[in-house]
Figure (cartoon, rainbow over the protein chains, first blue to last red):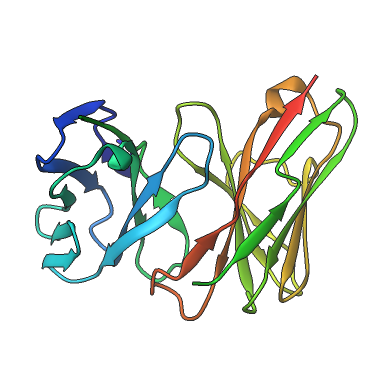
Length: 111
Length: 117
């Protein structure tokens, strides 16, 4: 079992719709969770992070964390073609500072 | 936000030669930097953790004698790929930790694409 798992996609959504991305992790002691966006040929950029159970909203993005079920999700509202990218879920385990990345989900927003 | 600069962005070298990639934190001090490798259509794989003033910590399966990491100052870490082979061709990305651990303040360099002929 991979430490951080994501559906590779592609996830195709029409412009203006909500894109929903999921990520599961295996280490129950994980403490910090991150979503990064990576455009082809570029390095990742942080979208948001979440530490506590529940929802965290930042603009069009909402991260949801459920530690009991060991999953974290990202919602992108009012999806735009510029949101087309690979979204990487990353986790920091307990008592560590290393990010472990999932395989990424490729999102395609169609006009 | 904080800026991490990586150089060179692209490098092509002959098999058997060595290549050095630099990673600099431009406006903050980074006691910890990380080096990742990313093959096409795959995720980032952590190679090593670079700590200023001490030896790097390598992930399992990463050859420390092949991938030399030096973190001589609080703003500079270097990765040297020694005796490069075509299978070392990849996208190498560094990141630097700003502030406390677990805060998410991990900033990535622009990446360096290495092609070994």
